[in-house]
Image (cartoon, rainbow, N blue to C red):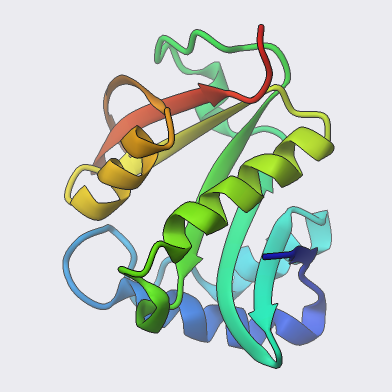
Amino acid sequence: MRLIQAVPADAAEILTLYRACAAGDVCCWDDTYPNAQIVDGDIREGTLYIWREGTELLAAATLLRWDDIEDMPLGFRYTAAPCVLCRLCLSPGRQGQGEGRRLLSAVEDLADALGYRAVHLLCDVRNFIAHGLYAGAGYRYVCDAPLYGHEYEVFEKPLRKL
């Protein structure tokens, strides 16, 4: 699996992937979030990465250099050069086949290559599949956090021995 930086021509397809992943009631994603402005901003900032197989877009993830959760007293243990992983999604047709773990591993490898030393993230409390993915990948539960009008569990993982 090779993640590549998204470009403006990918924006509509990424938004379609986000909408497909928003179906159901397992997370706070809906018709308004994530939206085209967020996709365009992530692309412009160079923080949105995608995975294609041939011409098909299968996954996307954003690695932010900073997010406001870094300024909140959430109890992060790994605070040296973290990134914030957000908007991680895998095409529904590829879920349940081990691809999520491969995707997360590729995102971690990319974050490490970009010089980050830890990953911080929020996970909607209803998203039990993602909870299992993060726990199985060695993420440490930090705390529960009511943020942005939703309930999240906060996770972190060091990328290198600290």
